[in-house]
Length: 298
Image 1 (cartoon, one colour):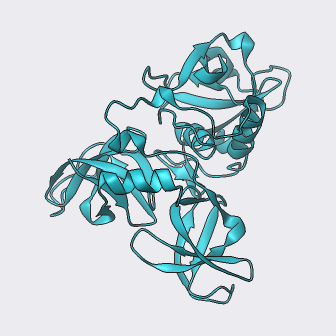
Image 2 (cartoon, rainbow, N blue to C red):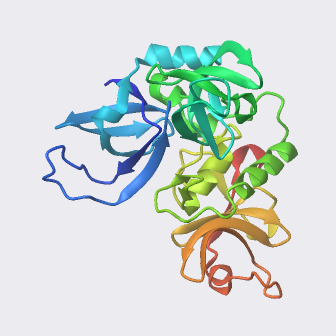
């Protein structure tokens, strides 16, 4: 079973295969993955790969969007910490370290790249998964905090994760909420995880992922992942709210941020559990099914 990395700026995972000859129907989007993300290739046929992402989510992508990368290379880049992640909503990779340069690629938040030694006028030279080299504003990238261990370490469990070195619970909660709020105004997009379009579980996933923790990418609690059910009365900032087919991130004082496809409140926004607030969503308050918390904090 081989492993690979995404070599295009973004790739959508589908629930069913789309055949290269056009004979297959287009099925529902399941997820979105970004440049430099690692995957396990479970099956390949007619130019279509069934893959598992580095956080264990499965779907189908076109083989041409992937570049083979052996498990030992994934292990090495994890251990050496040589990968950075785009931290801004979008970042252009420029041919020269100037705003007037030619744009080689436009990357969304969460994309992985390799920073090189050269720094010039606030720019950092970087290498992309396909070998392209160019410049991005140095402030647009930071050290990657998550890990590909699922793809090269047999038996590794997602619930065994720990906070990044030096991180404390309160700062993690605050940063997770700030990350979620940074997507405010983004349109709702089923299966999306970018600042161009994001869904409810994509928002929850990205808020944790960009702060070093991999959770399940869906509106449910899964045993193998690090979120555990808690009483709703004990909610704190950064915890998760679960509704039928929906998830939100709690901000405190009855407020939560979520990405919603509701006809009256479309996109990433803040709503309230408090009936007296103008942004109260009665339908969600009445359908709240459970709350979840990172098991490290229980």
